[in-house]
Image (cartoon, rainbow, N blue to C red; front, side, top):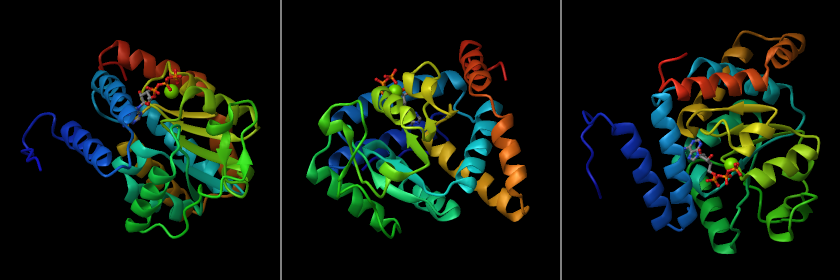
Length: 250
Ligand code: ATP
Ligand code: MG
């Protein structure tokens, strides 16, 4: 085990990295997941490791979409499971969403390890093991979903999704909420709502917005107005500007 002093200027970042390492050791996160984490860290560094205002707006729009949804599903991969399992369970409870494990490198062992890990963090039912549905337009292994989960969802939250699958899901006419620190990645570009923020900050932030909107008694009309006011291209541009300015812009 490692000890990171809280006074360390990169405390949060090191803690996050350590969680991914542990995820690999437990068989939850793939080794490719380590590389994905490294890419994410680079963008987070440039953003100043904070939630920029445009990402906060995106999180609010995401919350409105989730509250309006008939059947929202949160997709979980090995990085998400390692980084914020309890926060995913809380978001699912706040917006009454299903949780589905969905892996780019699918193995039965890893699927089961992640389902168990989510249960340890309070998840009730976890979907993904049935795999009786398919996303059209991508190869067989990558296309597997649960027919009564992501297969029939109207709103999907796909944190750190691979570009190809994000594109195929978008083509299925689903509202797609993507969390990705790279505003130039295809996943962010094809999203209905791209949240350019670290997953460890974005998920609790969406939950907080959902609770606020619910507590304020927001009507369908009000939620629809929040959804309509959100512009994905404006949000992506703002994130890219913040990165180019080294976190100073927004
Ligand atoms: P493209 O979407 O352009 O096809 P990619 O999917 O091939 O790119 P990957 O390296 O597979 O890129 O995916 C990792 C993505 O997840 C990167 O865009 C990275 O910025 C993002 N990412 C990694 N860790 C986090 C995190 N903790 N929070 C948010 N985003 C993250
Ligand atoms: Mg991507």
